[in-house]
Image (cartoon, rainbow over all chains, first blue to last red; front, side, top):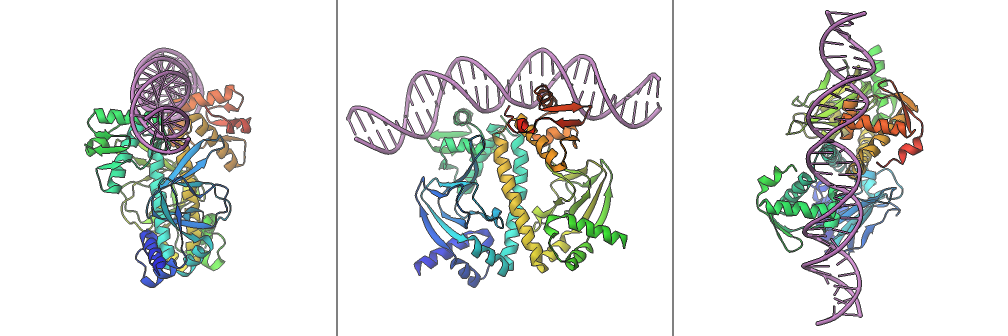
Length: 226
Length: 226
DNA sequence: GATATTACTTGATTTACGTCAAGTTCAAAA
DNA sequence: TTTTGAACTTGACGTAAATCAAGTAATATC
């Protein structure tokens, strides 16, 4: 019973499952397998059979891909409530990406087969999903274009502000270590370190210890362009 | 009658409308408005009411967005058979992007309202659409990650090979003028010019006249990294 | 506690690429 | 044809940021 209660909570976290009646939510929760993943462990690996979709119930997970030239790329950062796997729904096969837990995490998984059946029997879920994917495409398109013409400083400042706004705090521990943050922003750890130092000397932020950061001037951060 | 025949042909171009029965296709074709757009004209402008979706029946259209700082960004290049507007389906409002015809073009338009109704009454269309959007997300994610860590030379070489493969020819006229190609690849016309010269001197390509290009060593192009 | 390992910082150097400027080729209009 | 203007090329230069290298702080292991 407790397990089921947790599964319902997990399902309700996900935007595409919101605004559904209780019965539908309960029927989705029945499909869910809960799983604990320790920091540093993998939720799945590239090359695995791609047979389930994951909801992050708690924690933080990085999704990476290796290029032909052996470089690791950070594709996506999954936070509580994020849903992964929707994009390859009707394309069974091997995973191209790996997902590693950056913190201890709890993940709810639904089998691809069950999810496809759900989409077919529940029009509201299908329409929510269309909506969510559409927004995602628009966001990715805008982001892709912006990335091409944006400096590292801008991307970093933007990341700091977005993270602050996601956490609802102007003071927080950076959820990524600098190596991963560098991957995420497409730069090097050295440059991250230097840019943060620069922001601090400009009075935009204050650094405390290795990871803790306070945003002192959010408007200033949003106007950074070098 | 002829018009209707054209509309059916146009609808059949689009992946999400394929593998449907003839009757459904015909009912979709009834919703379509055909429109000719001359080279240099706009299919729609940023700020327009966003009330219809467009299928490119013939020609080439560039979708751009202007940043706050006034810079133009090329978001997407639409080719014959491409479908635009799916991403903002349930978010009515003003267009953020403009679309300009790069060649004389024929565009089939469906009103947002009719398309939403179609999605609700035809499950096959909705599922095809989910599939298409999912693939698009995966592609954009991979591309976004690659963009961050990839040199202009790599992106250009990649573009040349992809275009060749899309056209089915190793020798072709570049469909974009260099200014637009530069926007698309996030670089400057000067750099494009230099990189092409470099590729030519390495025996990877041959340039003839202003726009014509022959790929001499596709494997070599795919291995470019500077 | 001491030591080893990993994360991070800081400095020096190099490089890719953007920008500015001066041509050159091409195409359309007169 | 000549002319005009746009697209393109080429060169010189400056700069953001990658890379290389050496050192310092934090964390983990013994």
